[in-house]
Amino acid sequence: MHYPSFSIVLTVSAIAAASGLLSACGGGSGSTDATTPPSSTTSTTSNTGTTGTTGTTGTTTGTSTGNTNSRITAAIAAAKTAASTDPLCSVDKLGDFYWEIGNATGSAPVVSGSQGAGSVTATTYFNIASASKWIFGAYVLEKKGIDQVRSNTSLSNGLRFMSGYTGFDEEACTGKLTINSCFIAGMDGTSGKTSQPDPTMVNLFDYDSGHDQKLASVDLGLGNFTAAQLDTEYQNTIGLSKGFNMAPLDPLMAGGMLGTATDYSLFLKKIMKQELEIGRYLGDQAVCALASACPDKVVYSPIQLLNEPWTYSYNHWVESEQGKGSIDAYSSPGKWGFYPWVSPDRKYYGILSRHDRATGAYVASVKCGRQIRKAFMNAL
Image (cartoon, rainbow, N blue to C red; front, side, top):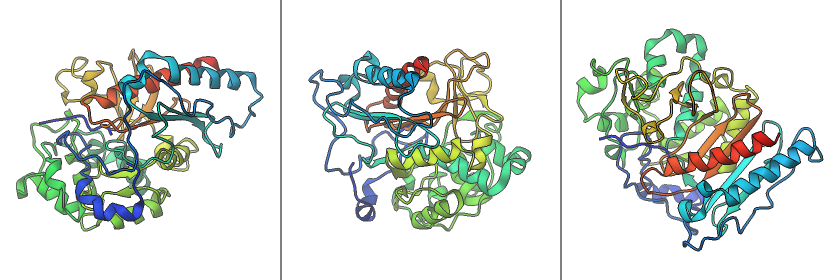
């Protein structure tokens, strides 16, 4: 059964002890009942109707043109207003959340805020669920290069969720120590399912964790890696912040990463500056991911809840409200509401950070994050 895997303050030293509770469960086909990471704060708030009571002053440093620029000033004000007053960003609906917009070179966000009671900040530690996918996609392109990814069907189909490795049981991954043991357990432990794809699913888009787990275990040779070894590999290959960690007892490539908005912003900046190969190929070979737009090519897609003609590239989404070749952003929303994006021109990134186990939490984050983005961009 498929579920969208789009996403609490926890110290890194406590991860191992809590890892049995940190079911990644955010890759695309697992249960929505993953245990929320333990936290000394909460990501929800009572329905007081108070919006943006904390942190709405935002941050106004780190722009290359300086904060005296009238357009930037206007954009900052517009973003703050959207975050605190737009109905789609209501704390009553979303609970407490943190958001920021930044550029590639600034040491701090251009603008940011903690909405609600302030329990969620830039350093609040979450299981980011399917926001993990973008990180793995960046890793694959860095290791293999664009020529191999484009020419090797196993790689290109795997990264675009068309490989036929579907029906993955994410819950079976919980408690596993290595990437391969997670892969075997998730594919029901049968050699046929792990050695050969389902021929009826090949070349069809199916948002499922099996694609990434197979790529990591087989194509990338990471099968014997533990979560700690993967963390080191990510750090050495794509310069991923040490603030990120794969859930130690749930090494799910498509949904097991834990981190903060600050950690993720550093990753997005590397993409925007094209320090990573994927930064030059956002949206490359994107495939249709909405069944109503191409019913014979899509098996399952979480975007059906938005009913927008998004497409899917190398482990990241190409957002488009209207379709017809338009691109609104590149992104990788997590099941529980962690939502990172990069603008089509790669000049700005944004993050909306929260943790909400309600069904469709990622949709609410996308809608709010999009309103903040539109307000900011339209004012520039």
